[in-house]
Image: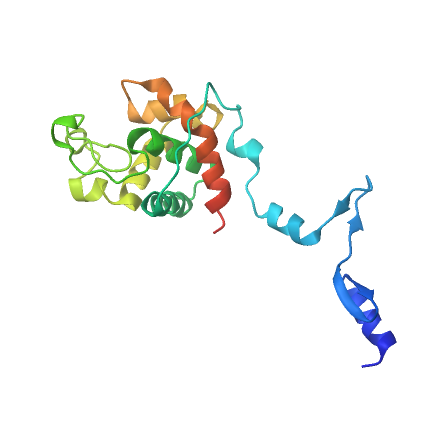
Length: 195
C-alpha cells in the first residue's frame, strides 16, 4: 500500500500518523474544546448513571467492606437476578445494599444461637415467614427474586430513599441501617452491571 493511501486509511480510522506509523487515537474536541478519548467515552457509556443509582444522594455516614470472591459472586448473582426480573440498576442497588446489611453478601446458613429466629441466606429471609424453604432462600437467584418480588409490590419504591424501600420489604428491627451501604452498592452495580 502506498504511503499516501495508508495515511488516508489511518486518518479515517481516527489514528494519527507520525513518520508513517500509527501513533494512537486522535483527540476529537467537543464543543467546549475538551479533548475526548473515544475509548474512555465508550467505557463510560457502558457504566450506569450515578444519578440513577443514587437519585436521593446517600443518607448518613457510609460503611464499606472489602469483598472476597464469594461476596463478589453473590453480587453478580444479585445483578443477574435483577436483570432476569426485568428490573433496573436502582433495584440492584437496593438489593445489594440490603444484602450488605443483612449478611455482608455472605450466603449464611443457620447460625445457631446467633441466628435471628430462622433467618438465612443473603437477605436473611425466614422460612417461617413465607420466604421459601431453606434450600430456596439460600439460593442467591431465588432469594434475590423473592426480595425483588416484594420490592415490586411497594408502590413508588423507585422514588423512595433506599432505606425506606428496603425496610418496607424486610421489616427490620433496624430500619435505618440499610442506608449506610448505598454508596458501596452503587459502586458494585457500576462495576458489575455490564460485566
